[in-house]
Image (cartoon, rainbow over all chains, first blue to last red; front, side, top):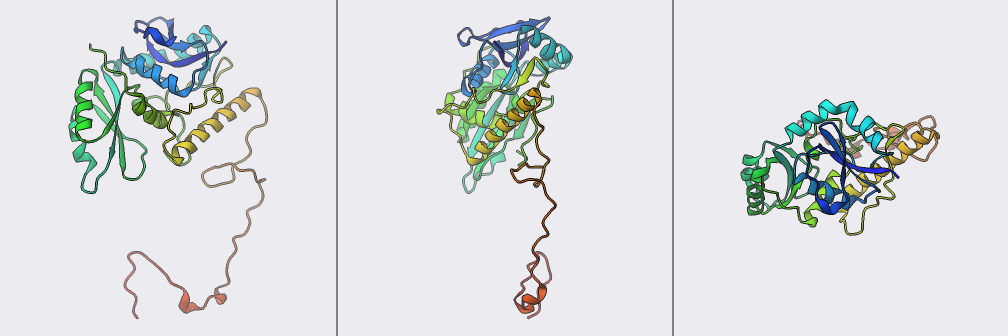
Length: 179
Length: 123
């Protein structure tokens, strides 16, 4: 039975008990896995739950490994130093999204300034007409403040999310439309 | 450290649409693969927010199909033939010469040239 991979965490990561997620440990690193393939929504729910207890480097959805040995030898071992560095970088921050429908007289930068002020980094996400979607990397302890600021600005807020938009490593190739 | 709240699943579904094909890519090996999205089909409760998102989802599925074919050693994908390397069902052939309307067939005074920033035309 293949293992479904969620992401890489520290070996000491506290795993939420109710998601059938367990850790495959190699030294100080671990991969969060589940026994059977998981649909998209439960996958993202479990990942987001993992983020609440510490840093997570998410792997692309649909990644399967044959067994625990394969997780250690093919996922964790080849890039252990890089994974450690990423986990350190993400230790105290989480990704949040703010989706803001623009009124005729609103500037997104002005409206979202209170959220930007809290964030270490921000990146524009693909969006549709009349809407601005932005990802922010905010300190964990500022999460509630960020949510309030986003909602006060009239935006919709999602988070904490795994830091998909702020990974240093190679991403899945962009689609032909450049999103 | 206080445990942050888990996002409401409405917001999460929206974020999922955006993040579907992001994440650390593990190079496929014999024992690790990125496959099986048919089993992992998006559930009905997820809002496919737009045609754009749906196309990206389809492209993600195609990538996985291609990966699986590469793993099973079957035929490689056909050569690209479209803009920016798209694939299609038409066989690869020599490019068809673009149909050009003979200039003489169009009376000169009906031809409108619209050039941004061009000097104002004299009447």
